Length: 85
Image 1: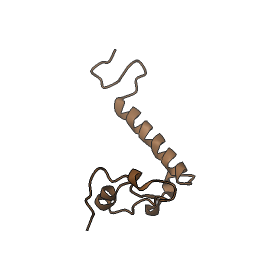
Image 2: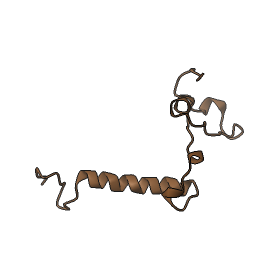
Image 3: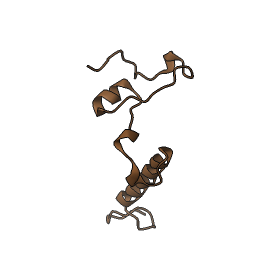
Image 4: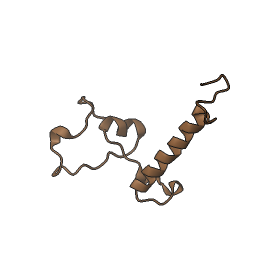
């Protein structure tokens, strides 16, 4: 039973603590996917966008997609023909 004290279930862990723990685990997985042994070793160069729009909004480079492996029709453009600039 959830009480008014901000805890969930019987574990006594607050939803915020659970969220932060999950966020930390996902960040660790991302760092390892970038070949880093520690989150603190991530660098701005490790961040890329998957769509043209995201690249323009976040001011980060667009991820390189090997066109030989992915048909051009499948390159993500989020359903728009907008080009930054």
